[in-house]
Length: 109
Length: 117
Image (tube, rainbow over all chains, first blue to last red; front, side, top):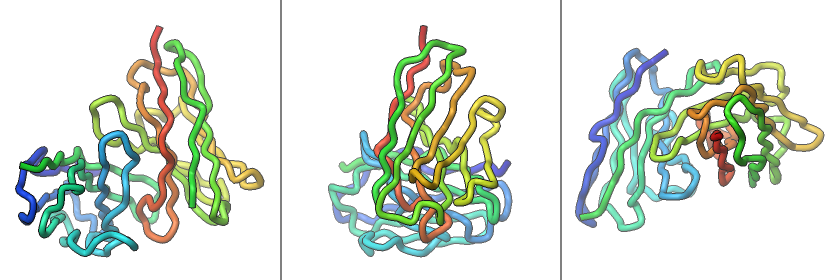
């Protein structure tokens, strides 16, 4: 199975700052990577699919980039409601198998 | 689209439990469905998936041979039969749907499974 790492595991930033999270995979996965936001006590929510496509209804301050083994998730102008844990996820195409990254916990300073 | 997962509870090690996920607002048979779990204080772990027709299923190695995913498209319901449960299976279990993307577009609220004597 493909191994996934995320960094940092946690971070703290000020409102208005730009925040960047990276996700690395052990093998080339093309653009088969998604990003999720999970707020405490809630189900995850899909934010970015296929590495860089913004899910419908998600604010444009969220963005993703990358291909192959290195991916980046960015929140520009951090808002208080963005406090959450963020996960990258690989979907094995065309098989229905998935792997989640370990997550990045984001806090507001 | 709404997904309502249910069936969680307290079960002894070695016991069984069946989770259900009832869907509304979608043509259920058209979409692949998944189960994802999250142990207390831990990250997300994909558990199992099934195609819209139910003909193809996939399992994480951690549950293969013990869990069975199935669906009843006439009842818009997804199931997860969990046998030989272990303490490490204790988690919140979410059902999820793959609607428009190759990710998990819609999620249930989760149902809690506790395996303990």
